Image 1 (cartoon, helix red, strand yellow):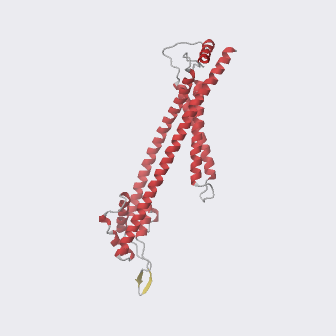
Image 2: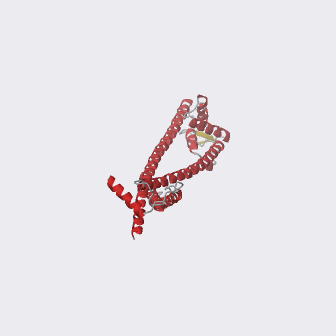
Image 3: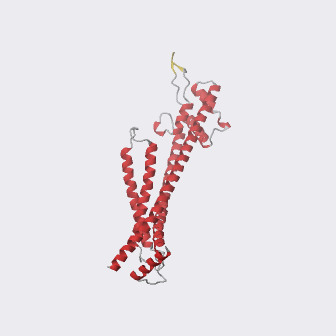
Amino acid sequence: MTEIAIAESQIERELIPVQVDASHTPFSWSAAIAGAVAATAVSLLVIALGSGIGLSFASPYGAGPSVVSLTIAAAVWLVMAQTMGFASGGYLAARLRSPAFDGVPGETMFRDAAQGLVVWAIGVIAMAVIVGGLGILAAGTTARVAAGAATGAATATRSDATAATPTEYFVDLMLRPAPGTSETVGAASSPAQPSALDSETRAEVTRVVLHGVSQAGLDDNDRYLAQVVSARTGLPPDEAKRRVAMVESKVRDAVNEAADKTAKAAAYFSFWTFMSLLFGGVAATLAGILGGQLRDGEGRLAQAG
């Protein structure tokens, strides 16, 4: 193997004249940046194609593939998009790099592989900056929406359906009239249609529930809700306390379930991001080697001709 490497080096020296320039580096930043831009463009192109295919199969009525199937397909497609994109970028950067022979025996292949790997690194950093910027904007928007929802929940009334929030369901569940409760209208008795709480009382109940969600449970000072529930629903005090405890448990379960889903989604996202970056880096490196070999082969043919 050593004799073959020396022979190849001698052939390169004979066919391609070496010009030693201390200020010149065999690495080309312009080629690397061009390859990174090309890799990003190809990746976005493939991702856009996959999004179109996925949306064509998705159905809001449940007739299409399941959410799990679509998620797995999207993750695999992302890996393929990164692989194709960075393979294109690494190959392009290696073909654009000059000179073909660096003047260092046995280093040409390594330099081409490094050129492709740097294309991958530039592309990853650029994508991370873009995704980070979009994430900051999304977080700011989410915070504003959440603040608006909390404010709306604090001032909402039962007649204002547009101000409903997920917490409103638990408030309604807590204040739901007891079965069989009746009220007197004139001289007749009819099924209960309790009058709605005034806006201030309902807003206070909503704030207490929101605080309980943020604290993973109601404080002891907030147990007076049982009195409000008893007066609103007609339940005995003990039943009202049990209802408050039941709603508190449901709120806690809902929060834990949402946190569990978020953690699993983050874990899946991290794993598939790792896989896509890994395949992209390997593809860029191998494509750089291939591009360099083809470039040097065409250079030798041109010199021989």
